Image (cartoon, rainbow, N blue to C red):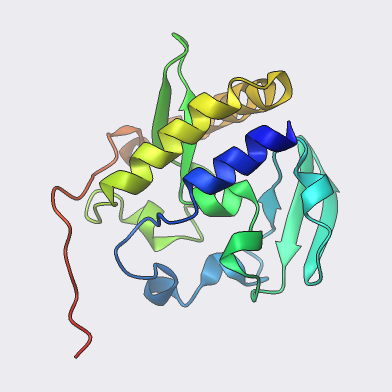
Amino acid sequence: MLEVLQRAYTLLDTVTPLTVDCGQVCDGRCCQQTADSQGMLLFPGEEELAHREGFTLIPADGGTLLVCNGTCKRTERPLSCRLFPLFPVVEEDGRIRAVYDPRGYRLCPLVRECAHVPLRRDFVRAVRQVGRLLMQDPACAAFLRAQSEEIRTLGRLLPQLTERTPIMRRNIHHNDG
């Protein structure tokens, strides 16, 4: 299981949702302890990897939540943080689809404005690849299926999130000078 998680982390090491730091859009709300941010649900086996300074683990329905102090290194983030605002949903036919996670609706402007903010193609692909990889581990596969069902249920309440993920058709380079 740990090997699968490490491979999943590697797939997401160099890709992010936007070409710029998406934390600049919302002042890093997903990394702050607020009433809207109650932590990120850890994948099976991640508890072993999450005992770092600045992380608090909280037992919750369906697993363990990780709450950080907002200053963790990208390389130390759990899988849910690296995937956010998407999630690799397992369809009934077994295919993996990268969808906006409706659980982030109140927190993330990328989720709320999903029809207007295209995500990087390599990020969306990496989320799907991570989903396929995690399906190779029985515990992670069961977790993905359970989370997928919850996401489908919540998605029915937020119909705009059931549309396809908008993807950047070309890279946009920003000039800092």
